[in-house]
Amino acid sequence: MIRKTAAELQVGDVFYRETYRKPNPETDWPYTVSSMRRVPQHDFFGKMSMMVEVQAVNRVTGPAKLTLAEDEGVWLTDAPAAAAPEEGRLRRSRRWR
Image (tube, rainbow, N blue to C red; front, side, top):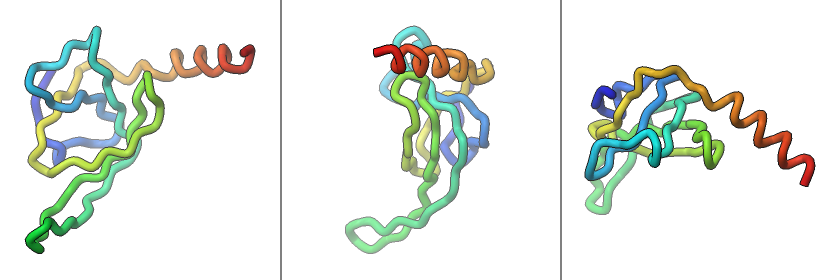
């Protein structure tokens, strides 16, 4: 895993949000970036900062919209996104319920 900032993310990247420890692939949920854009945001005192709005897919919870600070840390994985086969399997199981 490689630590980078949210501003360095690209479409197709698989990443974990940074927490107090390095992510564990067995227990933490990865996100796959589907689209992203930079958005200005004003804080309480009127100071403007740029945020990164990321549309991502989580293999457990599905689509997600994350708003990250440009300098917020994320952990990129080396593995390609492998979420598609599992999602297809889950969709089929939901139809039978």
